[in-house]
Amino acid sequence: MHDLKTNFGIFRDLCKSFLQPYLNKHDNFKNYRHHPKMCDLDIIALSLCQEAMSIDSENFFWSKLKNDYNKDFPDLIHLTRYNTRKKNLAEFTHRCNQRLAEDLSSGENIFLIDSIPIPVCKNARANRLKVCCENFESSPDKGYSAINRQYYTGYKLHLVTSIEGVSVSYDITKASVHDIHFLNDVKYSGLNNATLIGDGAYISSECKIDLFETCKITLAAPAKKSQLNQPIFPFTFKKSRKRIETLFSQLCDQMMLKRNYAKTFLGLSIRILSKITAVTALQMINRNSGRPLNRLKHALAT
Image (cartoon, rainbow, N blue to C red; front, side):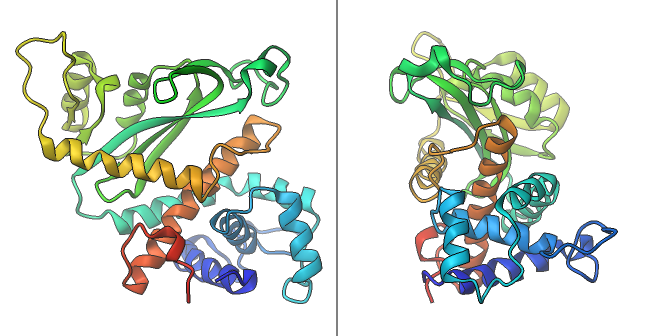
C-alpha cells in the first residue's frame, strides 16, 4: 500500500491509457531536440502519486525518492527542473482529469456545484503577505467563510461534480469573488441538458434563465426564508448535495488541500490541479477494482 514504486506504476499505467493519443514513442507530449532524462508521462504520474500518498512537501518527497528509491528511479532529475516541467505540462494533467471524468460520469445529467475556502496565511500575517502576490490580478485577498464564520486571506476553489462526486469542472478565484460569478464559467464547461444543484449562494433568477437559455441547464437552489411563493427544494436534492461536501472533506483530509507550500499563484494552481486529478484517478482505480467509487484511502490497497 505504501510502496511508492508500485503506486507510481499504477498511476503511470492509468495516465498512459488515457493520454495515449497525445504521447510519442518516448512517452513525451512534445518533440524535444534532446530527449529529457525523465519523460513527460513520468512527471505527471509522479505528481499524482505524491498527492495520492498525502505527501504535501515536495522537498521531502524528492529526498525520499533519492534516498529510499534511488534504484527504482535512476533517471530522477533535479527538483527545480521537475517543478518547471510539471508547470509546463499542466495542460496535459488537465486533459487527463477531463478524460477520466468523462469516462466516470458518462450518461449522467445531474451535477453538484459548491466552493471551498483556500487560505494562504493566517489573518495576523495578511498585511505583510508576499506569497502569490507576483501579479495583482492573481494575488490573494480577504473573503468570508460561511462554514467557519470568519474572514480569511486566500482564494476559493469552485467545483462542479457529478452526482457520484467526480470532478468535471473547477476554477480558482480570489476569496472576495461571490460564488454566483462561477456560473458564467459553467456555460463553457461543456455541460448541456443537465440539472445543477447548488446551495443558497447560487440563487439568481438572471443566472438561472441565462443557464437554461444558453446550455439548457436547470439551476436548482434552496430558497431563502425571505423569498415567498418559491417552489420547495426537493429532499433528494438536499441529500445529494452531501456528496460534494464529503468530497471537499476528502480533499482537505487525504489531499491536504489547505496545506500548500507554493510561493506563486501558478505553483498553487498546479498543486490544486494535481490534487483534483489524483482524486479522479483514485476513483477510476476503485471502479476498475470493483470497489466503491469514493473509498479513496482503499484505492491503492493491494
